[in-house]
Length: 67
Image 1: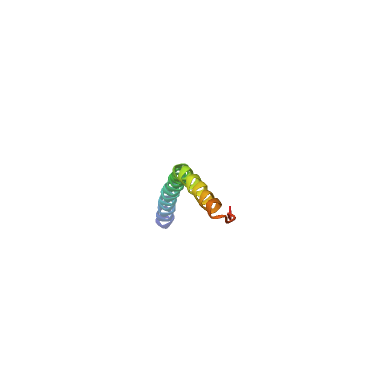
Image 2 (image 1 turned 90 degrees about the vertical axis):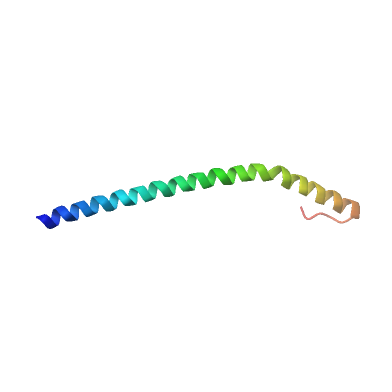
């Protein structure tokens, strides 16, 4: 009887620990997703300007662009 109680407590504690780890992992994935979206928004204008500069430089040199 005591073994069943101890086993039940161990199972419940394991489920609580796994739940906490899962909750933390899902939170980290959400934060990472938001950070990546913000980084993409910040970099997009710079990338567009760089692409335009490369196209302009290639046009001045008379070479086709790879874009």
